[in-house]
Length: 432
Image (tube, rainbow, N blue to C red; front, side):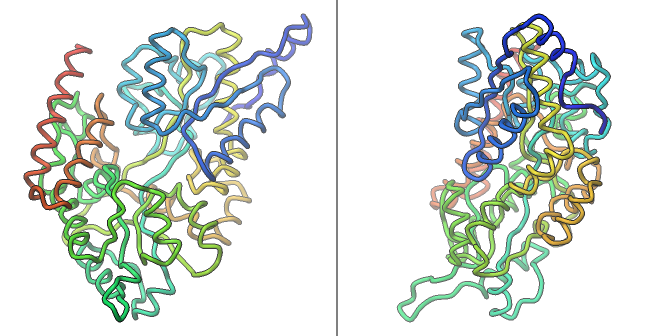
């Protein structure tokens, strides 16, 4: 990927006329291990040049970050750059509040063609990049190799049916009948359901995931969604999948403590999992299982960096400079190594240090193998709709109802779909 992360022209101007350092604000949603890696990028950029100074602010979860952004936009005081998750793409693009990355790249002849194809086809909306892919992920299966060996299992499960069989074999109880090791830990998370729909070749919203034309209704309550939710609900109610609700940290800790032998999570959890396991047992990562007889792919996850309007030109230049630095090959390699997010550019994949790292750490290469082998269809491209955050919440509410036995999976998903469709209709009415 071509382009240099440091703007020379701005530096010459600043030094020649004695201008003060240009200060910009960067909002992000990375905590824990990933937050430390984010701060390392900010410090690296600030140390690499003298013209621009980035101040980073953690704004909570992705959803919290969007809420704070809306308030900042109403006050006409947005950050210069914000990390916004994949679900925000259509809403942010249609807000008119961001400067498309494509426009900034065209201005200084920066080549965006090196962005990995799965990311390019997700984030390239209507022929433009509104944000620059920054932290790229997908969902994968983590499994405890030592626990597998003790249970006589020699490979990862490939289908839903195999996964249930494995989970039963891996679940252990003490003499009093208390579970001391669950087969799995899969939390209530709409993104998992989306990915499990995609790997069956299904869609979350109509019009081929909103890719052929604007989405007007959801499809997650169809056969693929019902199979995915029922799979998790049935294992939870049987007692072979530990119920941690929506708590991602509790799910991860169930695995790293040995309480659960398998779990589904983002590739972005690899750094935290590795640190928490601490070599106490061997674990591996692989692609998600799917129902026998189905075929599909996986969609990207993660977030992009967006540059907002309403700032002086020199501040916008610094903001764009920071974005270029964050997606540059060497920086993306260090980010990948520290977090588990996979690199966003092909140039990073081709670095000698990346190849050496993968050879020593095969789990780190799993997401690249998954995403690059995914079929290039509309399903695995991922859904775009202006209310995707609400859609995900509705799916999670349905899962909770079904796990609690307050509704069947079909009833819960149909009720959720009705709410999602109402939200989608309201959003669409505002942009037509």
